[in-house]
Length: 112
Length: 111
Image (tube, rainbow over all chains, first blue to last red; front, side, top):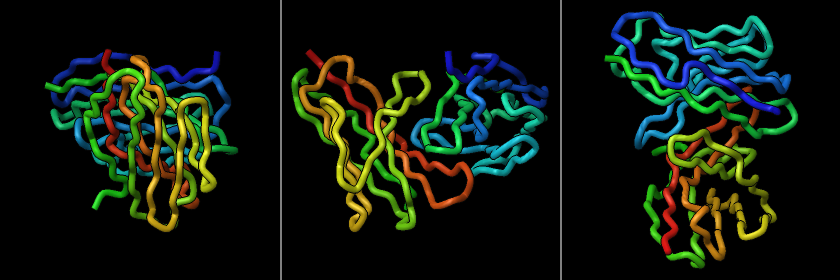
């Protein structure tokens, strides 16, 4: 089954404690992205990657890091989480031939 | 001004009603347009692409007006299962993976 997986699905953590949210896709897609979704603000792109070892900032990259060492994986790293990073996070991937994004199930992060 | 603007709703309609959502975008260079559906606390999923000539998929019709920078989605004979948030999405020219999402319009279909 074609899918994007994320882990963990739910995470409650404290300010400053480094965390990583993993993302993996099995569709051999080149493009992968991370979004956060907040009430009234919609989905905003954090980072994206056009291929292995190629990443770039989206609209709201501050406080986040990513890496793309393998085509299938695109982890999101919060080195020092803060309460304003409490949000619903989605990983997404797509191929090169169209714009249809396949989203992971989401990670609900709470930073206290 | 937001790049993609939608009326947040909620739109509460009876089952069987016809409902229309509108969306405006600010970047005239935008190339591709989509409607996504998002159920509560779930991931967005592509509902349909939007073409200049208009396109239909069952009970759903999407229209694009480039001159007015306006996109619409019409749902006929609405079902309870259509209750969701509908996201208008605009893709720019180049820019790698740049999709811009509207904040969504919430639809509630009631008995």
